[in-house]
View 1 (cartoon, rainbow, N blue to C red):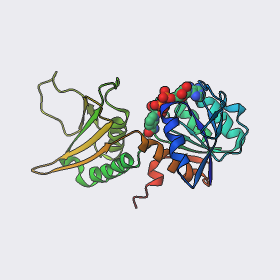
View 2: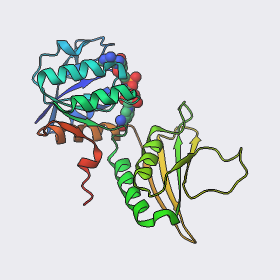
View 3: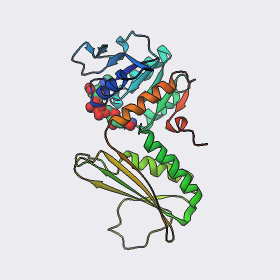
Length: 254
Ligand SMILES: NC(=O)c1ccc[n+]([C@@H]2O[C@H](COP(=O)([O-])OP(=O)(O)OC[C@H]3O[C@@H](n4cnc5c(N)ncnc54)[C@H](O)[C@@H]3O)[C@@H](O)[C@H]2O)c1
């Protein structure tokens, strides 16, 4: 049984996470933390407004809160020698360095996208890019709801970064073609954003060759899948040694 502390338990993802864990037999919540905590208890576990007040015995902290919570989480996890699953997005470069440093002492799982499907799409796309080489043009299309303010999505960039890490030529990201009248260059990865309605999140990687087209796509139906991925990661991390882990460790492609 993996004993979990939820950081950000009163937020959207924290609540979904608590309800997903309540249905699992291999995990349980022993405490919650949220700076906006308005109650002392939530669905059977105690809630605190400061992680240092949590005195429950735990194996893993799952965090869906804010970048501001990072320092307190890492200090607490090192002090108690427990694992972290960090799902919050938007960390600065310095914060990513501090995560890597802390991973020398404790096991840390960090992913900007906790969907197993998206991470599998990334692994499959890397494999396709290696096999198809520079003969195929690569374009990424992402679609999200009309309330999303940033573009392209962090996940589209995560896919582009993964692809450029395996390409043999330096990659140039192109977000807009309307300003320049010129042909597409082989080193480009075109990244396109569509916004509308209530689309949860769709990502498509297109490999366009001579008279053939390969498309790898993923469609998210609800935010629940990120919580499911986070719980699976927490259970996976329960018996791990210190180090930095991500979804690629959970998806064995060999
Ligand atoms: N990695 C992924 O796959 C993935 C998926 C969904 C969301 N996220 C990220 O998770 C984070 C939370 O998303 P959300 O939709 O639940 O947001 P939310 O605003 O609904 O919830 C965040 C909660 O964290 C609390 N909080 C803020 N600062 C805190 C602190 N210092 N200590 C403790 N609690 C604090 C807030 O009071 C709030 O209740 C965001 O960064 C989001 O981008 C990541």
